[in-house]
Image (cartoon, rainbow, N blue to C red; front, side, top):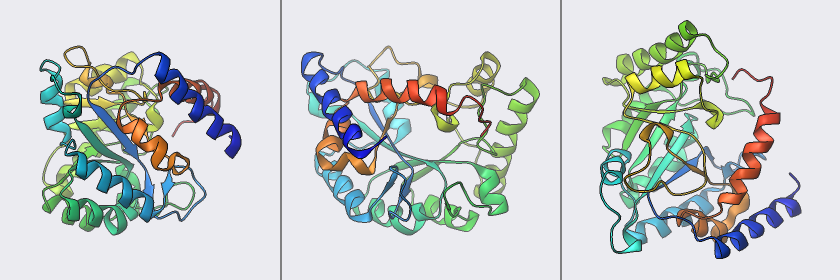
Length: 272
């Protein structure tokens, strides 16, 4: 989407929020890459990411994914400033350890990293020249106590277009590798490209993980959220601080509605 059109969409989403107030709940943010080494809108400059993390640290709203899930079962807090924020990363590129983690560690912010294990195991590049993280780097960030490692399938396969046997192989292979190299089986899962799985995939995911994440660009309401359908908000280079702050507050749902429609066309023939 051209830059001016993207900005117009974002401002329209903000305008809709003033008419229809976003619901309260747990806000889960999605990051992909840090370093601005590509033209991808999900590849943020280090300075922008740092500014965003400093803003969240000041808010004192950031919690781990497990704590957020516990709090989703509770009643809505009286103070809107107490709504939790969860930081998540998808894929498992090397810039997480090199550039993102030092910022998180300095500020003491927990995060969840969903890893597509085939890229780590074989060290083949992600699309758009994404260098994969190594198992040793994953072990190092995990040892710091702030990062939870989750599954993002083995090959980044879209689980709505696989047979049951292939789904099980994708999930089990990823879990086995994470356990082998990091000493634990993952408790959390994120669907690749935020594309929901088939009925078979949904059942397989629910038996293996405490939570599963999609997209959504809105807060997850207290007491009514299905933890295996967590809504997450993608953070983009084009957001800047203005739209980031709105997204961190659970806003800009309309932006996601258009993205979902566009992705149905974009990924119609994709498998990963």
